[in-house]
Image (cartoon, rainbow, N blue to C red; front, side, top):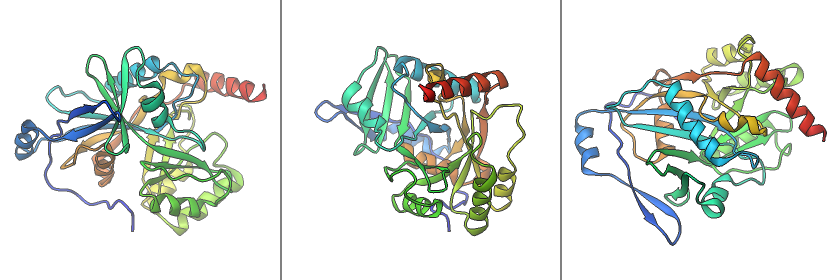
Length: 306
């Protein structure tokens, strides 16, 4: 049984979120308003766009990063002026990183953006000075004993890289209340590692796979995606920025979008509402061009070789 069941939820609700700033602890609390209640009765839904694989590296200029993310969400997904929207970035921090803490407790403000926690530090609201908001969910990227990356979305589960096998990591993410995802990685789904994933797919289906914005558009879809769908394992999508300054504009360029309802205002519940039904969402955005892929891989290898 999946932690998130795939069943239709009847009806829909419009999310219209108000926030109250608490200066003491820099936490925002969600509140329903009268317009939300009225729209719930009218069956209005919420358009949600999600980038499921996001890194915010120190080499990124934060204004460039968040300005680009809003632009990418806008151009990559259908726009309906009458529909409320929520754009989500799923953080996938490596061991020792805490992007949400850095944004809310150390940075707090860039030139154009401010950062605040939501509800017991369970998410982050990034708000532009002109009012546009993005929401960031905490998450982890962990490397298994098999040298395969695993993402834990919307949780703070942490483990030392290469200390646990795939199944143990998936179990741990579930126990932490997260969503386990195995993302595509260049050269990481071939040979023994590819066979390891096939064995995992034949043994369990309580996790997701994910395509990556780094996979070049000229490449054929990995065979494991088809095998996963046949076994009931959905394939998500995320931009997966690399630690290169040129990737500061990648967030929000590749992900999933759809309509949800009814949902509560918290971003984590919104994400789960979107994932409940496989037909409720689809992949949006663009993957890397062959030229961009080659340049990025070359720069990455040069950086690692320093």
